[in-house]
Length: 426
Image (spheres, rainbow, N blue to C red):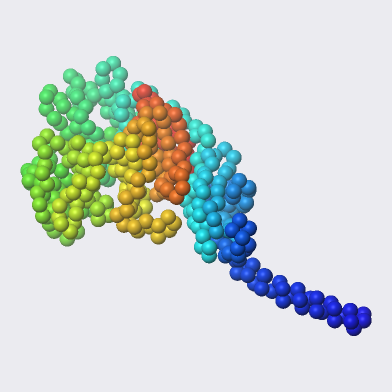
């Protein structure tokens, strides 16, 4: 090869190196040319974690990647800083979709994407059922049936798939008994039953772990302080009591200390029921008129927080509560959320308002709520970045919904029929 040709090749490669080196350096540092804005910009990324795994991720209507088999996650890099349409798809499941802003040198995280089956199967579990009660561990159901004018209670063991007779009305009295209330004991071993027999209120305990089942009458418990009108235990075992003078007390069972935590008397209304709801340092008082009050712990007084509150539910991670008011759902954050989207302690998120009445709500994960309306059962995320993804699971009319966190199934009571779904989550 002639010397002149060799020099030409050398200088050509040197020129290309000088020309391309800065471009390659910028490229590997995450810089790209934004043709729309006609400028050089640093890119961002997108991280997703989905259930189920191996879902397809579409960016701006074009398939981009799949989440992996082991963790159900994926990282998509080198995205221009702008709004991107993101879709998560899998055959047989609902589609999740949002438009989110990707920022320079930042990774936008979406760690709680859940896709739900398009057609969740339900099967009939029982007929002629008037009401049902779940044990606190969600392993046992008691339901009430009525035939020929007499009621009976059935016991259903969910783990063993075994149904048995718990009690007949005539077991209590030949002349019948008016049913009042039923609840499970804290230890899940007994059922507390209240009835009226010959115009007298009577209480019974049924031991459900013994064979045969044992029934014993118990005397009505007398309050140590007759002025106490309501008590409630929190997750730490502390007992809160509200007395007839409108003062709230906290009983620390570990230290055996009782302290008054309200400085001023709350104006109680006659013939009105009250309930106490202590959640992770937040203490609510709810009256029978559906008014919700929050304790200002610095001032020691209850202040009105919301109206028309039908129910409150704490999330599985104990970091937030959901409450609904007729057609609206709100989320109150009890703890700081560091993951995206970030939340502050005490932040109140208005989730959405529907055109139909909400009858009850349940957390199915710490980031998804299920709720029933007059037209069916729905599931919604609580991530309010862009639109909130909501899916209709079933179209039961005027139903009562129960979510079993133990077996991950819905139980729906409608028209005296009890239905159970297939497993909703892995």
